[in-house]
Length: 462
Image (cartoon, rainbow, N blue to C red; front, side):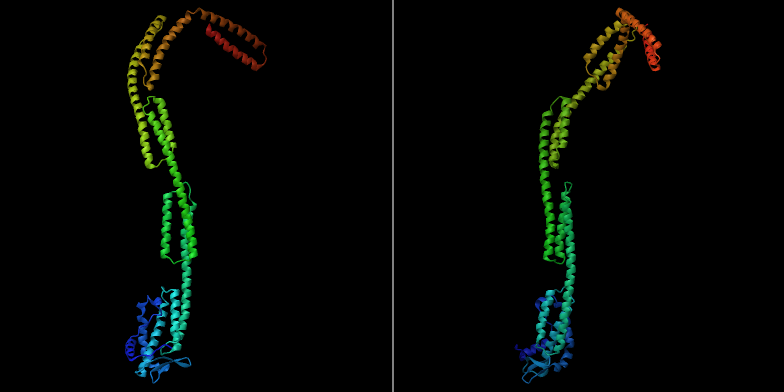
């Protein structure tokens, strides 16, 4: 048995300490954070000290040599020695130690109500208190003390079950919350396509990862197996996205490089054409270059802007030169139009003509006008038909008089007219015979229609 002999000096110090007994935590690990609650059981012990000391003789005795005994079950047990002191002082010392031990039990009972207590702390404290109440070196009601400890053991198991159930629910909630994060990541990964907004999707994955880390910090720690399985799913989705984005980026870079190469070739062709004066042909070629440019794709915003500036510079060089040429041509054509309108006035002044002599004289004058007309050159396209038609009208009126005069003096024309008339008369006689012999109404109607037509011809040439 441990040496529980108390010396006079120790007696004085212990007695002074017992006046305001302080409860001791069952273990440093268990009560490291509960020092602020120690005053409560200490006050209880102090309040019960007088009552306990009055009944100390019920639970123990002191022999003449200062040995202190406590009643334990049916017998008694030596708990220490306090020589050179009165029996009352010796019993009072060990009674206060009893109160200190009971204060530990009371303190643990309060601690069990705390939301911060952990199962490990409960097990460690119960184990410590179990050793301390097994054969304590105190004087007091050991049966009541052990009954209180037995109740505490049951309360401790109940509290552990509550903590376990709470942890189970908290873990289930944490797993569900983390699973929701994983499912969002999987949904993003499963919907990747050529139309995916990669920057926006990357931001969403980054936000989900931040949620994951925050959840790890703020929620209950879940089982390693569940945590590893969920992380594997999340990591797989994120890896799938990163691989798809890298593949897309590589394809985009290849497309941009190809587009840049095509556009650089187009720019080279444009630079070869920009000084050409074959306006129509080169305009078609520039239109073809523009169509190829649109089909080439994009080379990246900054590069596209720079390439387009080079192409536009070459195109502007050509089209500005063409426009300058057009402006110059238009000015010349406008002057030509004024000259031809003056000639038209002269040509139209030749009319009217009614006789062959007038027509001959007008024809000679018109020939000179037409020769000068051809030497003037082009006029604006919008005016070309108008003035050409007016000149043609003068020519036609003169020609009409010439043709009429020619027909009147042409012997061959008279002969042809007489021969044609004779042929018509013979055909009409033949048609009369056929009509007389025909009984078929439809055939007769057809023959009569043919006869009427030829009679009109005959009348026209007579």
